[in-house]
Image (cartoon, rainbow, N blue to C red):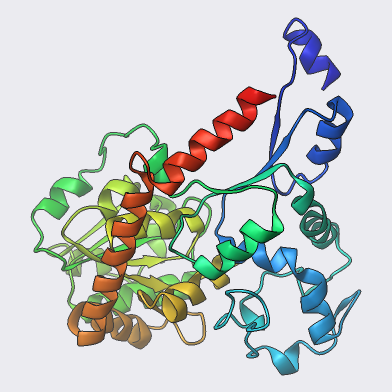
Length: 360
């Protein structure tokens, strides 16, 4: 930090904003002086943060030891109703390092310490919005000196728009309203090869038009002849402008890994989801989508099979329950849009964050 100050010609540091994982930034702010605030930034959802704030209680409840969880396997379907706003979330949905896995690993200890230290921050800035998980945010408002929901950040501070280099938006323009399936697992995640094949077969069996964002190096893993057989109703693209895709009226369902940015982008588009989580907070997000907000479905065994893919797409696109999912997703979209308008809670919280920085 001293080197950074010297390189800027002796600039005064008035505020420290850090990812919440970097809990030691609070110590740094304290060293700079009592007047320097520390703001923790959580880019995930409120439920995923809550489990880290209550790690000790969770471990006590399931008798988790240092090397693992002695009682977790027999309680994986127990719900966390004893935590504010977490009814419906199960122990099996928690990220590794909370009550399962090696609880003495460097990463597990980092998460644990974060949960202990974060409440002393001057403020918590979090990428969610009032009305999405009200009971959790009520708890946060009581637990933190300032809790500032700023989300959806993709609406409040939208990134620069990138050109549609693969022509997928033009392709969507030719599809019927609400009929197309969009598949995207983010830039870092790709399902195992066997699941890729099952997903492709399920898409083919569903008969629905689809847009699939898939890096070209994975195309050889698709079933033989799949691309040719589905060319009249499917487009596999190496990249897609996902936020714009999810706001396109032709998209009726999103097959997703449930990364938080993707979840918010789908909410902004009012698009129901089919969930295949892999790691971290994705399991909690999936459970929220399928059981709390009821705006999507999750695969029963968290793996994709041809039949389950076809069934999930049918439920969302063709049934009365799927229509209700769409209505709920659109209702949450309306709330999100309201919060980022002038005078909305997320807009006002951004002003409050600027005031914290400016007042220091």
